[in-house]
Each structure stands twice: as C-alpha cells, then as structure tokens.
Length: 237
Image 1 (cartoon, rainbow, N blue to C red):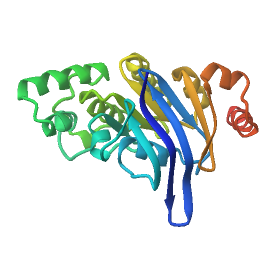
Image 2 (spheres, rainbow, N blue to C red):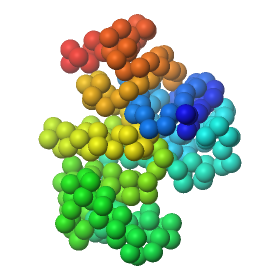
Image 3 (cartoon, rainbow, N blue to C red):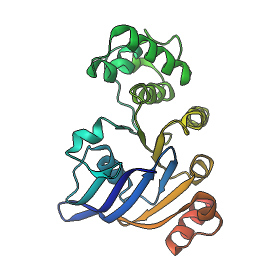
C-alpha cells in the first residue's frame, strides 16, 4: 500500500529548476534510497515530502487523498538532515521536544525517551549536554528525536556522510533494526549503503527521475546510461 504519492511535482529556485515533473510513491514499511549526483534534486525532493517546501506545481497525496496543507505532512513525516542540529539543552530535552509539542504527559514522555535512547545506543545519556557530544552521538540524538514521535515516514538526507566509519556503521545498524517498523526514504552517495539498506532505488539526474527499480535489479542491471555510469564511477572511487 502506498502511503505518500507525488504526481508531476516541480520546484524551482529562481531560474534554476531543482525538480521537474517528479512522480513517485512511498510504500508501507519499505526502505527507499534516492541516488544521484550533486545537484540532482534529491534534498529538494525530501524537503517537499517532509512538508518543509511547497512545490510550484503538482499534487501530493497521503494515503490516497490530496493533502490539505503541509501541516498534514509534518504530523506524519519527519526528516533528519546530514548536519545534526542540536538544541542547547540536554539529550533528554532534545529527544523529548516533539513529544512535548504534542502535549503528551510527562510519564509517557519519559518512557518514550528512555525506549528510543536504548534503541540508538545512548541509554544513560539523558543528562548529557547534546552539543558536547561527538558527531556520531549527535546524529544518534537527531535520529532518536525523529523516532520518538513515531513517524509513518522517516526521511534521511545523507545520514552518514559526515561521520567516521564506525559511527556510520552504527547508524546503519539502527536503520536495519527499524526498517520494518516505518517507511524510510534516504538520500545517499554511498551505493554500498543503499545496497545494504534499501529494497527499492530511485535514481535522479538534473531534477528528474531517470530510474525507479527494485534494488537488486538496479545494481545488477541498471536500465539507464546515467545510472550505470554513476554506479561504476562511485564503485571505482
């Protein structure tokens, strides 16, 4: 079943057309990786899916119905950026933020924060200053903050691009644990990461979707010249 659908969505920044007539579907509890070179429109697409940007044209449907404003998306979809943004408070305060906004009682917030910190391997970090943590730990806090509100779709923009190898592997392990609890859409340049995590691959170039294939099929025999060149180039690099 499709949760989110974009039909012929376009977005420009002045004279630059970031994405053009993009149509895609995000299915229930799948992990979808969006690949493509810099400037392909991947981050713009994620921001539209998160309700952080409004498209210039096109239709967005949630569970088969056109959305009634971006707030409808923001209640169900959350996004984690490649550069973690920490509030100037404790780890607990960061993770609890979205739960407090939703008006949950303190005891329920405590339980959810404890559970999600255990999930990301930060149990016992509640009172630590979030801004004093390492980059990998901050990314785990950002992921915990997103997961605490139990989104139906989790969007990740290059979630490990600024991390060292052990921290990146730890984030991938967390994503592997949760991938069948929620739908995950991630952008990445790391084709090996996409291959490890994703069931389906979308390849973008110059603001358009060039290919949408099951992951195994995409990596075994890409249909487009652009995708084949990207895979061979990234593998060589």
